[in-house]
Length: 223
Image (cartoon, rainbow, N blue to C red; front, side, top):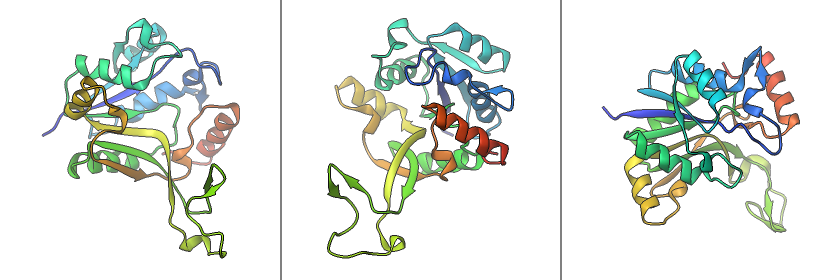
């Protein structure tokens, strides 16, 4: 059986919404909500919080989750996920790594389980998650999935896959190999996309995001 690790990244300093990982839903910090959800999943062999901040280490230990303290230089605004994921994988060997973002609090256990199954059974090296947007989309002033020569029904359009980063999964060995060669490990190898529900695709980056997920959680989403 492959070894699968869930890693919950958390940085104390955030530019757009201060200390967003410590914001609460139902009196539970987002980071703790992610820990408890990952801990309850049978598909993970280990659950780790990855941060430069000791406050997250204290929360991890209090909730029965392991803590990886990344180097200080990987906790600043200039640090990329490429770097801290690679540093984590070098310290914690596994077959697959699944990044579970605490700031996507409405991802359901069923979605996590199906995401992991897809990653580990399809030969995928990189599995991204997000929402299928089946509506007219543009980029740089150009039509992406529709023709300007006619008005097609939206249900007939090819969906655009919007990456939300709620969940991300990698084959560990090929990630490390790609990184070592100077490639972009985040999007390496056989790339695939896993569709989430619209609530699960909401990531808390701004105040309005937080207000939306709080309201949706109160309505029963994310269970």
